[in-house]
Amino acid sequence: MSERRAAITSLGRYVPERVMTNADLERLVETSDEWIRSRTGIERRHVVEPGTPTSELAVRAAREALERRGVAPSELDLIVVGTVTPDMIFPSTACLIQDKLKATKAWGFDVSAACSGFLYALTLGAQFIQTGAHKKVLVIGADVMTSILDYRDRATCVLFGDGAGAVLLEPSTDETGILDFMNEVDGAGGCHLYMPAGGSARPASHETVDQRLHYIRQEGQHVFKYAVRKMAEAPKQLLERHGLTPADLDLFVAHQANTRIIDAAAERLGLPEAKVVKNIHEYGNTTAGTVPLALATALDQKRLKRRDLVMLASVGAGFTVGAMLVRWSGVDWS
Ligand SMILES: CC(C)(COP(=O)(O)OP(=O)(O)OC[C@H]1O[C@@H](n2cnc3c(N)ncnc32)[C@H](O)[C@@H]1OP(=O)(O)O)[C@@H](O)C(=O)NCCC(=O)NCCS
Image (tube, rainbow, N blue to C red):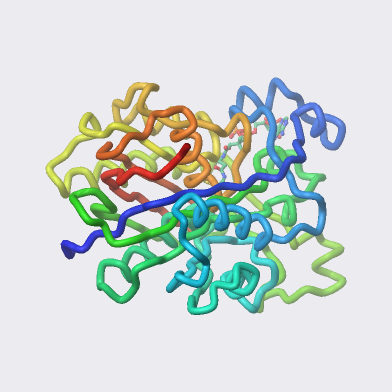
């Protein structure tokens, strides 16, 4: 990779105030707080008021990231948004965010990679810094998962929440920054986690609505097994490229889909709990939001220091796999 690294120089987050607890879900579907906690680690999740679009959460996270760094929206060159719950199919959510922020000179686009959306967006954003094409790139992971959840399907509706995180990428001035990435796709896994209708294959119709096809469908166990394997394999391979081992990592920041997935991956990597970030109990799975929200949690807990070696990792619908090795540059978190 080129010597001009991209560095994460600021971070912002937004989750809606409204909370849905496991007890609230017990009133909607046949489930129990005990089942949800023991199978997923989730205790509550933050959810929007119905009708709140993804761009609204994204803009709040973006404003926080920009304000922390004292950067005006008008200074941005590019906005990349990872999301599977865009406000609408087009224009892209990046365009809507560009307008709301008044990021007058920025161009932008959305990235559809589900739970790997943030890492794919970050990979893309970093390229424009590394080539020297851009100086300030805003990368956002944001999803309103409650807009595509079927509250009659207990196997999926308990898992997800709404949230957004944003980071600012700028050229690194020292040895810190994004060191390397490794992304993969296994398209054969598409049938295990998807939303059947609303695209060109099955446009919205009375029939698709009647059949509840505009919601997430998931074969949980299949996704679970794939996620555990890849969440450990991808980081290991990425480390090997650099002659490193998991023991060299200071922090493992993984996509938050299920505590058991994170624990199993950490165990395969031989990482102690002290090096693993978890906030799924509070937010559930916010899809593209989880990795930046987990970085924010690590900063809250003062577990992320300048020059720390950090592994970001995700597995999502597609299947999509993401891993990124970062020498943390430090952000103002006062
Ligand atoms: C969804 C998930 C938590 C289910 O856990 P699991 O241990 O695999 O559970 P199963 O799907 O085998 O279901 C076990 C039983 O619990 C039941 N069950 C499913 N959801 C339930 C709920 N919310 N409450 C109570 N029971 C539930 C099932 O019906 C099944 O009952 P049965 O044995 O009578 O058929 C787990 O598979 C998972 O986390 N998968 C990955 C999800 C994911 O990460 N998705 C996002 C993309 S990364």
